[in-house]
Amino acid sequence: MQTDIDPRSLIGRKAFDRNGNKIGTVDEVYLDDATGVPEWAAVRTGLFSRDAFVPLEPSTLVDEALHIPYDRALIKDAPDFGVGRHLSPEQELQLYHHYGLDIAAPDPLPGPDRDFGRLAGEEDDKA
Image (cartoon, rainbow, N blue to C red):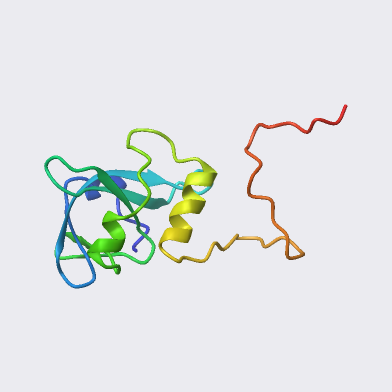
């Protein structure tokens, strides 16, 4: 998706799935902690429904609407974390796995093992 779009301008836009079916309306936009780039959107899926998190990277903004390249059923089945709170690294990981997205680090670490379980601010137990 275009990264020069003001994330606030996405709020209130209609969202559609890969087949052109309306999913709902963008309720909130979540920025990447490191880069400040819009990464996820919470889409209100109905009047009494919950918000579904959708990735903005493969999505496109066309004719003032957000087009998400996934089926409606997959989007509505996304993990529900509630809105208005920060997404934890573990929650983001769940979303990446749900949508089958690769997790690419800007500077890959050497070796096959990566530790995604440690949160920023946690200290080692070593004295």
